[in-house]
Image (cartoon, rainbow, N blue to C red; front, side, top):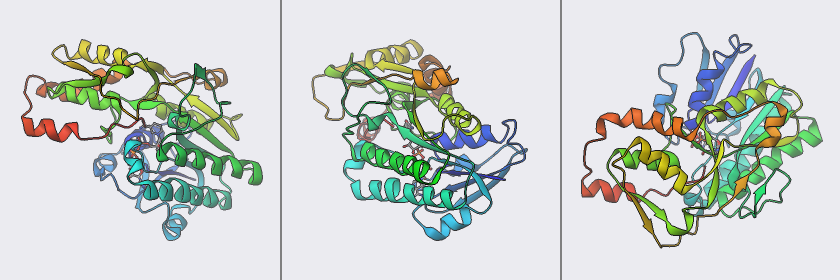
Length: 331
Ligand SMILES: NC(=O)c1ccc[n+]([C@@H]2O[C@H](COP(=O)([O-])OP(=O)(O)OC[C@H]3O[C@@H](n4cnc5c(N)ncnc54)[C@H](O)[C@@H]3O)[C@@H](O)[C@H]2O)c1
């Protein structure tokens, strides 16, 4: 009995593999991680819980040989592997589609062949694109980034396999994730702004984005939703939004400045092509039985606690240049 977690060394995966190893019913299962280590988060596979049965394969979801090895005796899959920075996906469109669509399809094909019991695909709120009002899973998506488009095609591969081959696949559309995990990334907005506040950098907010809302989700809630989907029935062939809160930039910066009172917020009139306001309805999965229960406040505090020693230090101008150039992603 093996649970395969592709991309298990990433931000979400590093917490998922730890929690899954101690989830009732999973203690005797092998948790096998397949990750290309593209993001070089070796720390994610260090100090794993001793009671867990872990296996790690460094490999690529686009590579048949790697997938063959990864799928031996697999009965459940969580597919988290992928190219995950939305703004950067404009520059690396080919790679984004190759990994997220071609690679994603291959993982689904192997899962069908292995006749797995459960398949969970981690999609994103970025598939929606511009919307009016609060929208649910029925909304017709028009993603604006290659990342969003590639994830929408990844979803389709899962849902088609569910219809055509009976794969018990569930798609979760996660809000932009925030909060601490051992393998965390710092290119999403809450985490990046919290980090910047901790190192004494200003938080630059586009004027137009101050009151625009977007969906967010605590990393622990993303992990809990993935485990929930692995273990519950009645989710086959369906899409679920998973949203902790639809929050504006004003709300995010106010949570950060409460935790780091010295943080400076700068409002700038410069337009940002990547800013799109959208609010998502997360009630479908709540009606099924899963409710996110970790707040923005908790996520920000966890990160601030990790950097607390640095709080009084000032950044040099070189650091300022370096950190300002990282494109912020929405998941
Ligand atoms: N973090 C968010 O805000 C967020 C929001 C919504 C959805 N998601 C989705 O959740 C999943 C996990 O996100 P994350 O934040 O943990 O991302 P991440 O970038 O931290 O993790 C992705 C992992 O995939 C691995 N990977 C990349 N290409 C690979 C390949 N070809 N073969 C095997 N492994 C490969 C990377 O090394 C990395 O460890 C992604 O599919 C992402 O689209 C994330």
